[in-house]
Length: 593
Ligand code: ASP
Image (cartoon, rainbow, N blue to C red; front, side, top):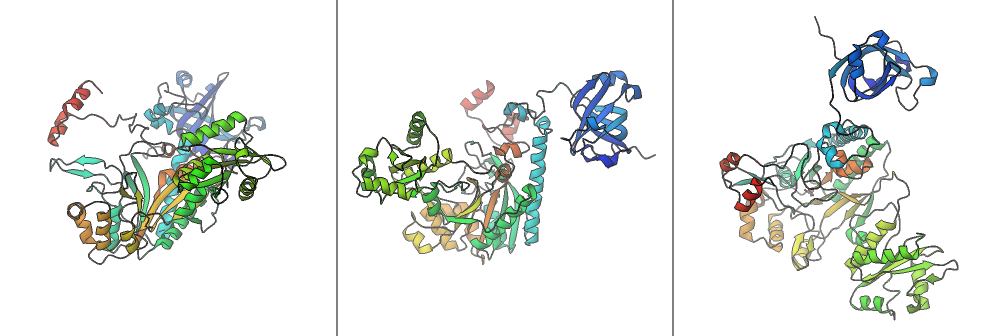
């Protein structure tokens, strides 16, 4: 005899027209209310919630079982779907027009007292949530985020499949590559003293795929970077990685627009306006003080150096003489008290400014400021005109070396600016990044990664500090969603980049000889990108951090409170790997640290 199915219907599916159906459901007790003997259970499964009525007179289960029913018990219910009486209809629930009158209830699996309440209003410490992630995932918000993630990735795959891309997997035990972050290493047992690295990204493998004739590649790729933790970084994270041969920047950006539009249409049901805004790196830095501008509000940084070219005001004059700049923002009507304005000045100092000048625009248009008396009338007029000042506006001006002014005004703009709508998604591309970042000690590091093509090879040879690259970023609401570039496909140029980075020819040969060699066998020009999937979904879902859209994330300190990773291992495992702990590490180990 065929066994009974555990369920014949799902909780969230019922509508008024289902009245009269005999069904069997299975799920969890979301809530339980005892109304003078009759028990009402909100039964939840992955599709939603339906009300189940357990009337002891119908003997759906022994009285003790009904009495003992608690939240999060896993149960199966058989019964009849019926319309609710008009006064008991629950308009907040999609299934609120009906209920299931139970004829039988089986407890499939009882639940112990929960470590925290699952209802959405309960504020629970995050470490505790992660320790019991399997319970946390039962909350509607988390369930919705996981579903959104799955739908987003499906939409991405759909867009790429439509465009003729091949999904190709690349290894996760690889040789260490110079991509900027610290590698996570995995010791080899078969070759003690040798290590695999976990990929910071599939960068070199996707380039090898281009050399291998795979002209369109993508992968939902897990990546690993051993960086210090920040709110929106994880030691392991997921990228949508892609690459194309005979491709350039415009091809990549157009494909990215298609992918992102597909995701936003799936998750938000809105069609994005395309093409996205493109700013050069220089424009982004000058107008927003950052390479990841939030363009949901104006308050752009405005050049004022010319207005104060001959100023007698020392703070501005000195900055200009030393080659710095004077720039300002019109912060609009902030309604700040004197204490609030003082706090702004403190904030600017904290951000590295020597000072910050504020000017309040009075009703008649005159500027009130502690420093107004040091500024000439034409300077005040030039300032008000350039910043398009209106009565009530607050003007903020900083004078210093350009990077300092950008950093300070860029951050104040973010502190003070408010996006108009909560839901707005403002995508843009930043292009024309420099090839190298110049460090404090004048050392050069790749601004993107060392496989990025310079816009002009001769320019890079002669002036590496200022050379422009073919790298580009995608930005959403002030967060970097990903980066990419046209790649170097000439082994000589690649060797030159290593040389500029201070990686000697021998060293480069030893570490990346295999890659330099691969470039010598007819490498097509190619370009690509990687989107940070976690961050993209978090922002679209309106979540404050990426952990809310990662099923099993690590805490800020890199640990997993559920499984206890990272954890100590059996000394025998270490010895098999040829690893011995340093005495002080061993001592800390033994003390249980
Ligand atoms: N591999 C790069 C990264 O992870 C992205 C790319 O250049 O395609 O940032």
